[in-house]
Image (cartoon, rainbow, N blue to C red; front, side, top):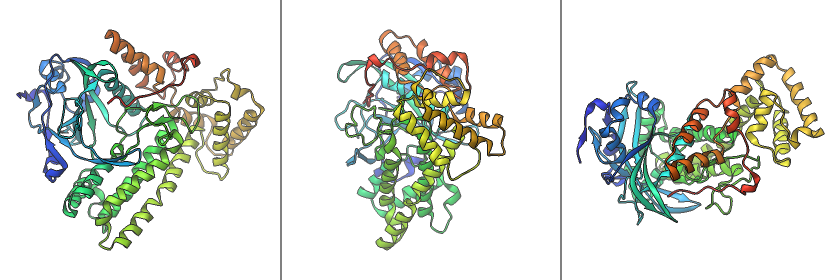
Length: 489
Protein backbone atom coordinates (compact mmCIF):
# COMPACT_ATOMS: atom_id res chain seq x y z
CA UNK A 1 0.00 0.00 0.00
CA UNK A 2 1.59 3.27 -1.16
CA UNK A 3 2.01 6.46 0.84
CA UNK A 4 0.57 9.91 0.16
CA UNK A 5 2.59 12.99 -0.75
CA UNK A 6 3.28 15.18 2.30
CA UNK A 7 1.94 18.37 0.62
CA UNK A 8 -1.53 17.31 1.78
CA UNK A 9 -0.50 18.40 5.27
CA UNK A 10 -0.68 15.17 7.21
CA UNK A 11 1.47 15.39 10.32
CA UNK A 12 1.08 12.11 12.13
CA UNK A 13 2.29 10.82 15.46
CA UNK A 14 1.37 7.40 16.78
CA UNK A 15 1.55 7.61 20.57
CA UNK A 16 -1.20 5.01 21.06
CA UNK A 17 1.04 2.39 19.44
CA UNK A 18 3.53 2.85 22.31
CA UNK A 19 1.01 1.35 24.75
CA UNK A 20 1.05 -2.38 25.60
CA UNK A 21 0.42 -4.43 22.44
CA UNK A 22 -2.59 -6.06 24.07
CA UNK A 23 -4.52 -2.82 23.47
CA UNK A 24 -4.41 -2.91 19.67
CA UNK A 25 -3.63 -4.84 16.52
CA UNK A 26 -1.64 -3.47 13.61
CA UNK A 27 -4.00 -3.53 10.67
CA UNK A 28 -4.35 -1.79 7.31
CA UNK A 29 -7.68 -0.86 5.70
CA UNK A 30 -8.98 -3.06 2.90
CA UNK A 31 -8.92 -1.15 -0.42
CA UNK A 32 -12.20 -0.46 -2.22
CA UNK A 33 -12.98 -0.54 -5.90
CA UNK A 34 -14.40 2.83 -6.93
CA UNK A 35 -14.37 5.52 -4.21
CA UNK A 36 -16.06 8.88 -4.71
CA UNK A 37 -16.49 11.85 -2.40
CA UNK A 38 -19.91 12.16 -0.82
CA UNK A 39 -18.86 15.14 1.30
CA UNK A 40 -15.67 16.77 2.57
CA UNK A 41 -15.60 18.99 5.68
CA UNK A 42 -13.40 21.78 4.36
CA UNK A 43 -13.46 23.98 7.47
CA UNK A 44 -12.47 21.06 9.70
CA UNK A 45 -9.74 20.05 7.26
CA UNK A 46 -8.25 23.55 7.39
CA UNK A 47 -8.30 23.58 11.20
CA UNK A 48 -6.38 20.30 11.15
CA UNK A 49 -3.68 21.90 8.99
CA UNK A 50 -4.66 20.06 5.82
CA UNK A 51 -4.51 21.40 2.26
CA UNK A 52 -8.11 21.25 1.05
CA UNK A 53 -7.24 21.41 -2.64
CA UNK A 54 -4.78 18.55 -2.23
CA UNK A 55 -7.35 16.54 -0.28
CA UNK A 56 -9.81 16.85 -3.15
CA UNK A 57 -7.54 15.12 -5.62
CA UNK A 58 -7.24 11.40 -6.19
CA UNK A 59 -4.58 10.90 -3.53
CA UNK A 60 -6.73 12.59 -0.88
CA UNK A 61 -9.73 10.52 -1.89
CA UNK A 62 -7.67 7.34 -1.67
CA UNK A 63 -6.73 8.11 1.95
CA UNK A 64 -10.37 8.52 2.94
CA UNK A 65 -11.20 5.28 1.11
CA UNK A 66 -8.43 3.34 2.83
CA UNK A 67 -6.63 2.73 -0.48
CA UNK A 68 -3.50 4.68 0.51
CA UNK A 69 -1.76 5.37 3.80
CA UNK A 70 -0.57 8.92 4.59
CA UNK A 71 3.10 9.43 5.37
CA UNK A 72 3.76 8.81 9.05
CA UNK A 73 0.55 6.91 9.71
CA UNK A 74 0.73 3.51 11.40
CA UNK A 75 -2.75 2.01 11.05
CA UNK A 76 -4.16 -0.07 13.89
CA UNK A 77 -7.43 -1.23 15.37
CA UNK A 78 -8.05 -0.76 19.08
CA UNK A 79 -9.13 -3.44 21.52
CA UNK A 80 -11.74 -2.67 24.15
CA UNK A 81 -14.62 -4.25 26.02
CA UNK A 82 -17.96 -2.89 27.11
CA UNK A 83 -21.30 -3.37 28.77
CA UNK A 84 -23.83 -3.46 25.94
CA UNK A 85 -27.32 -3.00 27.38
CA UNK A 86 -25.87 -4.11 30.70
CA UNK A 87 -24.08 -7.23 29.40
CA UNK A 88 -20.28 -7.36 29.41
CA UNK A 89 -18.58 -8.33 26.13
CA UNK A 90 -15.16 -8.38 24.55
CA UNK A 91 -15.32 -5.92 21.65
CA UNK A 92 -12.82 -3.82 19.71
CA UNK A 93 -12.73 -1.87 16.46
CA UNK A 94 -14.69 -4.33 14.37
CA UNK A 95 -15.03 -1.89 11.49
CA UNK A 96 -12.61 0.91 12.27
CA UNK A 97 -8.93 1.63 11.68
CA UNK A 98 -7.01 4.38 13.46
CA UNK A 99 -4.60 5.92 10.95
CA UNK A 100 -2.79 7.90 13.63
CA UNK A 101 -2.87 11.21 15.47
CA UNK A 102 -2.83 14.41 13.44
CA UNK A 103 -0.83 17.22 15.07
CA UNK A 104 -2.40 20.54 14.07
CA UNK A 105 -0.55 23.83 13.47
CA UNK A 106 -1.63 24.84 16.99
CA UNK A 107 -0.07 21.71 18.45
CA UNK A 108 -3.38 19.95 19.16
CA UNK A 109 -3.64 16.18 18.78
CA UNK A 110 -6.59 14.44 17.10
CA UNK A 111 -7.23 10.83 16.20
CA UNK A 112 -7.94 10.24 12.52
CA UNK A 113 -10.02 7.07 12.20
CA UNK A 114 -11.64 5.37 9.23
CA UNK A 115 -15.02 3.84 9.98
CA UNK A 116 -16.08 1.07 7.60
CA UNK A 117 -12.72 0.18 5.94
CA UNK A 118 -13.10 -3.60 6.15
CA UNK A 119 -12.56 -6.48 8.52
CA UNK A 120 -10.25 -6.23 11.52
CA UNK A 121 -9.10 -8.80 14.10
CA UNK A 122 -12.10 -7.68 16.19
CA UNK A 123 -14.82 -8.02 13.54
CA UNK A 124 -16.27 -11.19 15.10
CA UNK A 125 -17.65 -12.43 11.79
CA UNK A 126 -18.78 -9.01 10.54
CA UNK A 127 -17.77 -7.61 7.18
CA UNK A 128 -16.15 -4.49 8.66
CA UNK A 129 -18.02 -2.28 6.23
CA UNK A 130 -20.53 0.53 6.63
CA UNK A 131 -23.50 1.74 4.61
CA UNK A 132 -23.76 5.22 3.11
CA UNK A 133 -26.88 6.29 5.04
CA UNK A 134 -25.56 5.71 8.57
CA UNK A 135 -22.22 7.35 7.73
CA UNK A 136 -23.94 10.44 6.36
CA UNK A 137 -26.17 10.42 9.41
CA UNK A 138 -23.12 10.52 11.70
CA UNK A 139 -21.69 13.35 9.63
CA UNK A 140 -24.89 15.42 9.93
CA UNK A 141 -25.53 14.83 13.64
CA UNK A 142 -21.93 15.17 14.81
CA UNK A 143 -21.53 18.46 12.93
CA UNK A 144 -24.85 19.69 14.33
CA UNK A 145 -23.67 18.81 17.84
CA UNK A 146 -20.45 20.74 17.25
CA UNK A 147 -22.43 23.79 16.15
CA UNK A 148 -24.60 23.47 19.27
CA UNK A 149 -21.45 23.71 21.40
CA UNK A 150 -21.59 20.12 22.64
CA UNK A 151 -18.28 18.20 22.88
CA UNK A 152 -18.27 15.64 20.09
CA UNK A 153 -16.24 13.64 17.67
CA UNK A 154 -16.44 15.20 14.23
CA UNK A 155 -16.64 14.02 10.65
CA UNK A 156 -13.95 14.98 8.15
CA UNK A 157 -15.27 13.15 5.11
CA UNK A 158 -17.60 10.48 3.79
CA UNK A 159 -16.74 8.58 0.62
CA UNK A 160 -18.87 6.07 -1.20
CA UNK A 161 -16.96 2.88 -1.97
CA UNK A 162 -18.60 1.71 -5.18
CA UNK A 163 -19.34 -1.55 -3.38
CA UNK A 164 -22.46 -2.92 -1.74
CA UNK A 165 -22.96 -3.92 1.88
CA UNK A 166 -25.50 -6.54 2.85
CA UNK A 167 -27.79 -5.98 5.83
CA UNK A 168 -31.56 -6.50 5.78
CA UNK A 169 -31.19 -5.35 2.19
CA UNK A 170 -28.42 -4.42 -0.21
CA UNK A 171 -27.08 -0.91 0.53
CA UNK A 172 -24.42 1.34 -0.99
CA UNK A 173 -21.16 1.17 0.96
CA UNK A 174 -19.28 4.10 2.46
CA UNK A 175 -16.40 5.02 4.75
CA UNK A 176 -16.48 7.89 7.25
CA UNK A 177 -13.36 9.64 8.52
CA UNK A 178 -13.88 10.45 12.18
CA UNK A 179 -11.86 13.04 14.09
CA UNK A 180 -11.68 12.68 17.88
CA UNK A 181 -9.71 14.02 20.81
CA UNK A 182 -9.03 10.31 21.28
CA UNK A 183 -10.88 7.01 21.12
CA UNK A 184 -10.12 6.10 24.73
CA UNK A 185 -13.30 4.70 26.24
CA UNK A 186 -14.56 3.38 29.54
CA UNK A 187 -14.51 0.07 27.69
CA UNK A 188 -10.77 0.46 27.01
CA UNK A 189 -10.13 0.48 30.74
CA UNK A 190 -12.58 -2.38 31.30
CA UNK A 191 -10.71 -4.46 28.73
CA UNK A 192 -7.26 -4.03 30.23
CA UNK A 193 -8.60 -4.43 33.79
CA UNK A 194 -10.19 -7.74 32.78
CA UNK A 195 -7.47 -9.24 30.59
CA UNK A 196 -4.33 -7.25 31.36
CA UNK A 197 -1.96 -6.72 34.25
CA UNK A 198 -1.96 -3.92 36.81
CA UNK A 199 1.17 -2.60 35.10
CA UNK A 200 -0.66 -2.44 31.76
CA UNK A 201 -3.62 -0.72 33.42
CA UNK A 202 -1.26 1.84 34.93
CA UNK A 203 0.38 2.43 31.55
CA UNK A 204 -3.05 3.15 30.04
CA UNK A 205 -3.98 5.47 32.91
CA UNK A 206 -0.67 7.34 32.65
CA UNK A 207 -1.16 7.71 28.90
CA UNK A 208 -4.65 9.09 29.48
CA UNK A 209 -3.39 11.58 32.05
CA UNK A 210 -0.66 12.79 29.69
CA UNK A 211 -3.01 13.08 26.74
CA UNK A 212 -6.12 14.59 28.32
CA UNK A 213 -5.44 15.62 31.92
CA UNK A 214 -1.81 16.71 32.12
CA UNK A 215 -2.71 19.36 34.70
CA UNK A 216 -3.48 16.67 37.30
CA UNK A 217 -0.89 14.01 36.51
CA UNK A 218 1.44 15.20 39.30
CA UNK A 219 -1.20 15.42 42.01
CA UNK A 220 -0.89 13.33 45.16
CA UNK A 221 -3.48 10.81 43.89
CA UNK A 222 -3.43 11.17 40.10
CA UNK A 223 -5.66 8.16 39.37
CA UNK A 224 -8.31 9.32 41.79
CA UNK A 225 -8.06 12.76 40.21
CA UNK A 226 -8.50 11.10 36.80
CA UNK A 227 -11.70 9.44 37.97
CA UNK A 228 -12.98 12.73 39.39
CA UNK A 229 -12.20 14.65 36.20
CA UNK A 230 -13.90 12.09 33.97
CA UNK A 231 -16.96 12.17 36.23
CA UNK A 232 -17.04 15.97 35.98
CA UNK A 233 -16.73 15.98 32.18
CA UNK A 234 -19.44 13.37 31.73
CA UNK A 235 -21.79 15.24 34.07
CA UNK A 236 -21.26 18.35 31.97
CA UNK A 237 -21.66 16.47 28.67
CA UNK A 238 -24.89 14.68 29.60
CA UNK A 239 -26.38 17.89 30.99
CA UNK A 240 -25.77 19.46 27.57
CA UNK A 241 -27.54 16.53 25.88
CA UNK A 242 -30.55 16.99 28.13
CA UNK A 243 -30.71 20.73 27.56
CA UNK A 244 -31.14 20.33 23.79
CA UNK A 245 -33.22 17.15 23.85
CA UNK A 246 -30.56 14.84 22.43
CA UNK A 247 -31.04 11.10 22.87
CA UNK A 248 -27.86 9.09 22.35
CA UNK A 249 -29.69 5.79 22.00
CA UNK A 250 -26.82 3.40 22.78
CA UNK A 251 -25.03 4.49 25.94
CA UNK A 252 -22.96 1.34 26.29
CA UNK A 253 -19.71 1.70 28.21
CA UNK A 254 -17.72 1.36 24.98
CA UNK A 255 -19.53 4.50 23.78
CA UNK A 256 -18.46 6.68 26.72
CA UNK A 257 -15.22 8.52 26.04
CA UNK A 258 -12.64 9.38 28.65
CA UNK A 259 -12.15 12.77 26.98
CA UNK A 260 -15.79 13.75 27.53
CA UNK A 261 -16.78 13.84 23.86
CA UNK A 262 -19.99 12.43 22.41
CA UNK A 263 -19.19 9.38 20.28
CA UNK A 264 -21.17 6.93 18.14
CA UNK A 265 -24.15 8.34 16.29
CA UNK A 266 -25.98 5.14 15.44
CA UNK A 267 -29.55 5.13 16.83
CA UNK A 268 -29.41 8.70 18.16
CA UNK A 269 -32.14 11.31 17.62
CA UNK A 270 -33.40 14.67 18.85
CA UNK A 271 -36.61 14.64 20.82
CA UNK A 272 -39.70 16.24 19.27
CA UNK A 273 -42.59 15.90 21.77
CA UNK A 274 -41.27 16.32 25.30
CA UNK A 275 -41.43 13.10 27.29
CA UNK A 276 -38.63 11.74 29.51
CA UNK A 277 -39.62 8.20 28.45
CA UNK A 278 -38.84 8.90 24.79
CA UNK A 279 -36.94 6.13 23.01
CA UNK A 280 -36.24 6.06 19.28
CA UNK A 281 -33.79 3.17 19.00
CA UNK A 282 -35.30 0.00 17.55
CA UNK A 283 -33.06 -2.16 19.73
CA UNK A 284 -33.83 -0.43 23.06
CA UNK A 285 -37.01 -2.36 23.76
CA UNK A 286 -36.90 -1.86 27.54
CA UNK A 287 -36.17 1.86 27.44
CA UNK A 288 -32.80 1.50 29.15
CA UNK A 289 -31.43 4.47 27.24
CA UNK A 290 -34.55 6.64 27.23
CA UNK A 291 -34.07 10.40 27.36
CA UNK A 292 -34.83 10.69 31.06
CA UNK A 293 -32.55 7.77 31.94
CA UNK A 294 -29.39 9.21 30.41
CA UNK A 295 -28.03 10.80 33.63
CA UNK A 296 -28.58 7.53 35.52
CA UNK A 297 -26.90 5.47 32.82
CA UNK A 298 -24.06 7.97 32.82
CA UNK A 299 -23.25 7.34 36.47
CA UNK A 300 -23.75 3.57 35.98
CA UNK A 301 -21.13 3.64 33.22
CA UNK A 302 -18.81 5.72 35.38
CA UNK A 303 -19.13 3.12 38.12
CA UNK A 304 -17.74 0.58 35.64
CA UNK A 305 -14.82 2.95 34.97
CA UNK A 306 -14.22 3.27 38.70
CA UNK A 307 -14.23 -0.53 39.07
CA UNK A 308 -11.56 -0.80 36.40
CA UNK A 309 -9.40 1.77 38.20
CA UNK A 310 -9.64 0.17 41.66
CA UNK A 311 -6.15 -1.40 41.63
CA UNK A 312 -4.68 2.07 41.05
CA UNK A 313 -6.76 3.94 43.61
CA UNK A 314 -5.40 2.20 46.69
CA UNK A 315 -3.48 -0.96 47.53
CA UNK A 316 -6.22 -2.00 49.95
CA UNK A 317 -9.43 -3.05 48.18
CA UNK A 318 -11.82 -1.66 50.80
CA UNK A 319 -10.13 1.72 50.75
CA UNK A 320 -10.09 1.78 46.94
CA UNK A 321 -13.83 1.06 46.86
CA UNK A 322 -14.48 3.83 49.40
CA UNK A 323 -12.53 6.36 47.30
CA UNK A 324 -14.41 5.32 44.18
CA UNK A 325 -17.82 5.51 45.87
CA UNK A 326 -17.08 8.96 47.27
CA UNK A 327 -16.07 10.20 43.81
CA UNK A 328 -19.14 8.69 42.15
CA UNK A 329 -21.44 10.22 44.76
CA UNK A 330 -20.53 13.63 43.37
CA UNK A 331 -21.97 12.90 39.92
CA UNK A 332 -25.61 13.64 40.72
CA UNK A 333 -24.71 16.95 42.38
CA UNK A 334 -22.43 17.96 39.50
CA UNK A 335 -24.98 16.97 36.88
CA UNK A 336 -27.90 18.66 38.59
CA UNK A 337 -25.98 21.89 39.14
CA UNK A 338 -24.94 22.03 35.48
CA UNK A 339 -28.43 21.12 34.25
CA UNK A 340 -30.24 23.68 36.44
CA UNK A 341 -27.74 26.37 35.44
CA UNK A 342 -28.43 25.51 31.81
CA UNK A 343 -32.19 25.53 32.31
CA UNK A 344 -32.00 28.89 34.03
CA UNK A 345 -30.15 30.21 30.98
CA UNK A 346 -32.83 28.79 28.69
CA UNK A 347 -35.33 30.87 30.65
CA UNK A 348 -33.17 34.01 30.80
CA UNK A 349 -32.34 33.66 34.49
CA UNK A 350 -28.90 34.83 35.65
CA UNK A 351 -28.93 34.33 39.41
CA UNK A 352 -30.23 31.62 41.74
CA UNK A 353 -33.42 31.36 43.76
CA UNK A 354 -34.76 28.38 45.67
CA UNK A 355 -37.97 28.35 43.62
CA UNK A 356 -36.20 28.06 40.26
CA UNK A 357 -36.32 24.27 40.20
CA UNK A 358 -40.08 24.22 40.73
CA UNK A 359 -40.50 26.84 37.98
CA UNK A 360 -38.49 24.63 35.60
CA UNK A 361 -40.32 21.46 36.62
CA UNK A 362 -43.71 23.12 36.15
CA UNK A 363 -42.87 24.09 32.58
CA UNK A 364 -41.60 20.62 31.73
CA UNK A 365 -44.70 19.07 33.27
CA UNK A 366 -46.89 21.35 31.14
CA UNK A 367 -44.93 20.38 28.04
CA UNK A 368 -45.36 16.70 28.78
CA UNK A 369 -49.07 17.03 29.56
CA UNK A 370 -49.81 18.88 26.33
CA UNK A 371 -47.36 16.90 24.17
CA UNK A 372 -45.53 20.09 23.30
CA UNK A 373 -42.43 20.14 21.14
CA UNK A 374 -39.34 20.58 23.32
CA UNK A 375 -37.22 22.78 21.06
CA UNK A 376 -40.07 24.88 19.64
CA UNK A 377 -41.50 25.61 23.09
CA UNK A 378 -38.26 27.28 24.15
CA UNK A 379 -38.04 28.90 20.72
CA UNK A 380 -41.45 30.48 21.28
CA UNK A 381 -40.51 31.72 24.75
CA UNK A 382 -37.26 33.17 23.40
CA UNK A 383 -38.65 35.01 20.41
CA UNK A 384 -42.22 35.54 21.66
CA UNK A 385 -43.74 34.01 18.56
CA UNK A 386 -46.72 32.26 20.11
CA UNK A 387 -47.80 29.27 18.08
CA UNK A 388 -51.17 27.61 17.79
CA UNK A 389 -50.42 25.06 20.49
CA UNK A 390 -52.72 23.73 23.22
CA UNK A 391 -50.00 24.43 25.78
CA UNK A 392 -50.10 28.21 25.32
CA UNK A 393 -53.89 28.38 25.53
CA UNK A 394 -54.22 26.98 29.06
CA UNK A 395 -54.76 28.96 32.23
CA UNK A 396 -52.04 26.90 33.87
CA UNK A 397 -49.51 28.15 31.32
CA UNK A 398 -50.71 31.73 31.80
CA UNK A 399 -50.09 31.39 35.52
CA UNK A 400 -46.65 29.89 34.88
CA UNK A 401 -45.83 32.74 32.50
CA UNK A 402 -46.79 35.29 35.14
CA UNK A 403 -44.49 33.60 37.65
CA UNK A 404 -41.69 33.47 35.10
CA UNK A 405 -41.99 37.14 34.21
CA UNK A 406 -42.04 38.06 37.90
CA UNK A 407 -38.90 35.96 38.37
CA UNK A 408 -37.10 37.83 35.58
CA UNK A 409 -38.01 41.18 37.14
CA UNK A 410 -36.45 40.17 40.47
CA UNK A 411 -32.95 40.02 39.00
CA UNK A 412 -30.66 42.96 38.32
CA UNK A 413 -30.15 42.16 34.64
CA UNK A 414 -32.47 43.79 32.11
CA UNK A 415 -35.13 42.00 30.12
CA UNK A 416 -33.01 42.60 27.02
CA UNK A 417 -30.10 40.83 28.70
CA UNK A 418 -32.39 37.93 29.55
CA UNK A 419 -33.54 37.68 25.94
CA UNK A 420 -29.94 37.63 24.76
CA UNK A 421 -29.13 34.87 27.25
CA UNK A 422 -32.10 32.85 26.01
CA UNK A 423 -31.09 33.31 22.38
CA UNK A 424 -27.62 31.99 23.18
CA UNK A 425 -29.05 29.03 25.09
CA UNK A 426 -32.00 27.89 22.99
CA UNK A 427 -31.31 26.60 19.49
CA UNK A 428 -33.74 27.94 16.93
CA UNK A 429 -33.14 24.83 14.83
CA UNK A 430 -32.01 21.24 15.49
CA UNK A 431 -31.52 18.27 13.15
CA UNK A 432 -35.16 17.24 13.00
CA UNK A 433 -35.38 13.50 12.52
CA UNK A 434 -37.64 13.67 9.48
CA UNK A 435 -35.44 16.29 7.85
CA UNK A 436 -32.37 14.13 8.40
CA UNK A 437 -34.20 11.20 6.83
CA UNK A 438 -35.16 13.33 3.82
CA UNK A 439 -31.53 14.22 3.27
CA UNK A 440 -30.37 10.62 3.62
CA UNK A 441 -33.04 9.32 1.28
CA UNK A 442 -32.08 11.80 -1.45
CA UNK A 443 -28.40 10.88 -1.13
CA UNK A 444 -28.91 7.12 -0.96
CA UNK A 445 -31.58 6.69 -3.60
CA UNK A 446 -30.72 9.25 -6.28
CA UNK A 447 -27.27 10.51 -5.34
CA UNK A 448 -28.58 14.01 -4.58
CA UNK A 449 -26.44 15.58 -1.82
CA UNK A 450 -27.94 19.05 -2.18
CA UNK A 451 -30.69 18.30 0.37
CA UNK A 452 -28.06 17.35 2.95
CA UNK A 453 -25.90 20.38 2.12
CA UNK A 454 -28.85 22.74 2.69
CA UNK A 455 -29.63 21.03 5.99
CA UNK A 456 -25.99 21.29 7.12
CA UNK A 457 -25.90 24.98 6.20
CA UNK A 458 -28.94 25.69 8.40
CA UNK A 459 -27.62 23.57 11.28
CA UNK A 460 -24.25 25.33 11.24
CA UNK A 461 -25.71 28.41 12.95
CA UNK A 462 -28.39 27.09 15.30
CA UNK A 463 -28.56 29.95 17.79
CA UNK A 464 -29.40 32.69 15.29
CA UNK A 465 -33.01 32.97 14.19
CA UNK A 466 -33.41 33.39 10.42
CA UNK A 467 -36.23 32.95 7.90
CA UNK A 468 -34.45 30.13 6.08
CA UNK A 469 -34.81 27.99 9.21
CA UNK A 470 -38.60 27.89 9.11
CA UNK A 471 -38.85 24.91 6.78
CA UNK A 472 -36.48 22.98 9.06
CA UNK A 473 -38.46 23.64 12.25
CA UNK A 474 -41.67 21.96 11.16
CA UNK A 475 -42.84 18.90 13.04
CA UNK A 476 -43.16 15.46 11.45
CA UNK A 477 -46.47 14.37 9.99
CA UNK A 478 -48.35 12.38 12.69
CA UNK A 479 -49.60 10.05 9.95
CA UNK A 480 -46.02 8.87 9.41
CA UNK A 481 -46.21 7.02 12.73
CA UNK A 482 -43.61 6.73 15.51
CA UNK A 483 -40.05 7.48 14.47
CA UNK A 484 -37.46 4.72 14.85
CA UNK A 485 -33.68 4.74 14.51
CA UNK A 486 -31.32 1.86 13.82
CA UNK A 487 -27.72 1.23 14.81
CA UNK A 488 -26.53 1.03 11.20
CA UNK A 489 -23.97 -1.72 11.75
